[in-house]
Image (tube, rainbow, N blue to C red; front, side, top):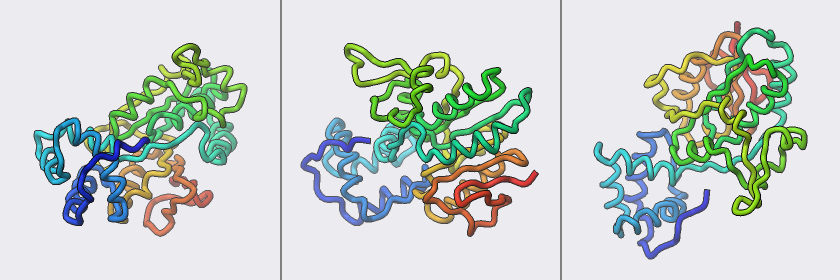
Length: 276
């Protein structure tokens, strides 16, 4: 995500930081360290200028009230980190194909959830792999994120070429269209594949608000590092409840959940399976 314009706003005070730390923790579970004052200032400055607000405390007052839901979502979109790319952490996809997809019955639906899908690269990576290895179509990919802005990008499926540099050439040729003219330097995920991925807004700290059923594979990668310990436990417990018996949970390579009392067996340091 690009930072906003650096305007003539005052430095973020300790009291301002506490206000936003509590707000983001309460609404999306985000643990925003005090060291991120500069990030908070730069991400919100452009929006504050558009609204004619000079003080962070005034912007907080606007988004903290019930009637500020729409603007609060705008602030959440601005503050959340969404950098990703296709085929990120490829050993996970290798494992998925080798240990899960290769043994999955051809006539049995394989449900996969990209639980923090950001701008959609992970979800489309999964869709490419499943479409290639299960062309009969007995699979589904559900992708969710708390940010409406990134979901809009994901549904469109238009990316800079640099985001696709890890896509295998055969998949790039099969599933992606190179942009021309005003879209030079970009590529578009083909419509047929886009239509097979369902994107929806979901808050990981409020999953019980919607019933999306259960899944055989859940990718929850590079997101729980932004939660404090209690929120991390709450999210993981809720996600695990949505995993079918015998299903797999993938977390980021830098994320460890071994210390938590979850009904999961470790297959590798970042891959876990729920007992059948």
